[in-house]
Length: 169
Image (cartoon, rainbow, N blue to C red; front, side):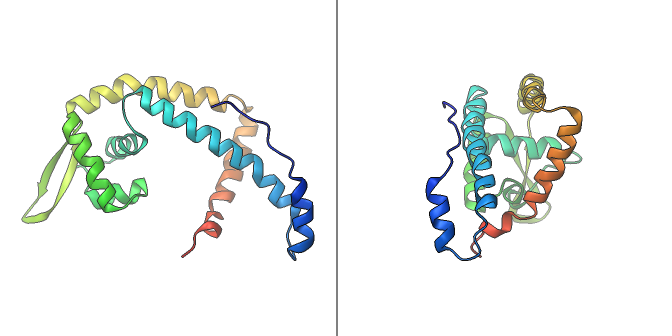
């Protein structure tokens, strides 16, 4: 995806006159974030595809990789981590079972649920791609000085605490 210059909305000034209390500067400051998200999202999709997995499958593999112990996680836990429905998680797990990256194991006497665990193949796969992935993360963040990175993290955490404003619950 080609990067584009963030627009300076001429219409925003007009809208700010018709929408009482609209902080035009706050809205204008959000636009570069939206453009960054769009470009970063497309780059990540291509990045995971280069590894031969979808973003959803990557998230499942990483959740299992980071999970404490060897017990794995339930599909419900994975769905919560990935921010997808349990039905969508069933499809992701099915695909990962087919590729040999995860197995399903029963949870005691409860046959209605199961735990998902990484296989040796998945562990080998992650060991082969994580160095490249982490270097790319490093290269992205090298756009900032160490002090700027600290400030960036603080600011992102502030924004994360406000994401709820876009949820229609």
